[in-house]
Length: 355
Image (cartoon, rainbow, N blue to C red; front, side, top):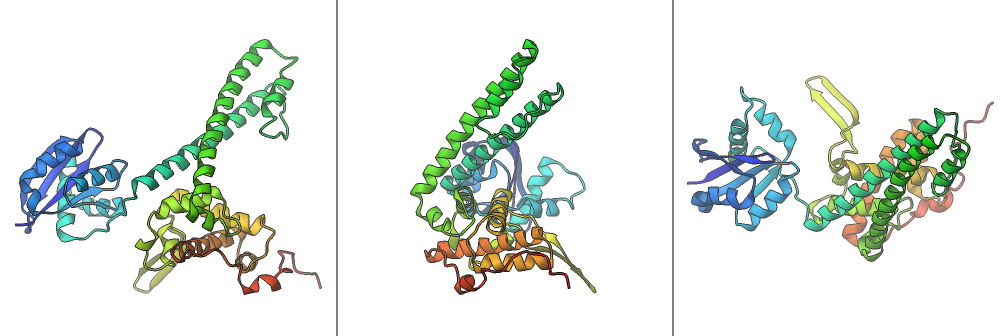
């Protein structure tokens, strides 16, 4: 007899459902969300369990690794697929969700999610923490500017290094109470800068020692953050049979809706890792708008920008960058500017000459 298991995972408890080949419910129970306890609940059936389904979530990767180490064939499935299957149920309960996951495992009507290695998960955590501190730093600076502006004190254009000195300069002849309030905010800002700089140094140190990231950075516009984000997002390049599918994996291809005589293409799908997609778009924007070196990819993007918009060109170049970076990683080769780089130096975004 073959058994299929569905786990509806929550922070404290996990509902477990086991079904057989015919979809008959063998057991329904719940346990503490702990791999050891869940494995003990499945122990009587462990030899005949074919799949253990887990919906993609913050705890999904951890449970997958722990249950796999205990000999259970755990599978993490896309949340979108699981939701679409379980929406057909009349009553939404954790118990019914576990049953739905078990039936999905039995029918095989699911798409497995690649569970990244612990190393890639740590890199993604580092990048996410760095980005969070950067965002909070900008919020803090904007808040301080707004607070001072309410009293007629304008910061003006000032570098990040001179921001604190400029704030104290404006506060010299003002109310001491206001200076005390702003000093507290500036102290918090200083701690944010220290934390951000520390994490950024970690990023630079990792990229410097990683041969893959250094190879990816030979592409104009691709910096340390983009290279490390792409490396962490892909994890294993050989899981893609074709490089052209990498753009779709990160949601950089057009959405399509077709039914009968209706066939529409919309904006990009925005599926997959959002952090990698943003990093690729930033690299594409840097290539098109900041990089002085002329290469065929940049010329192609600028020609596309003339026909449509710069935003469309940035997304298109980001998609091509994803394909190029993956191919470079698989082949172990550095970036080549292409034969058209020497003949496109005069390509510009100048407006057409008036007749």
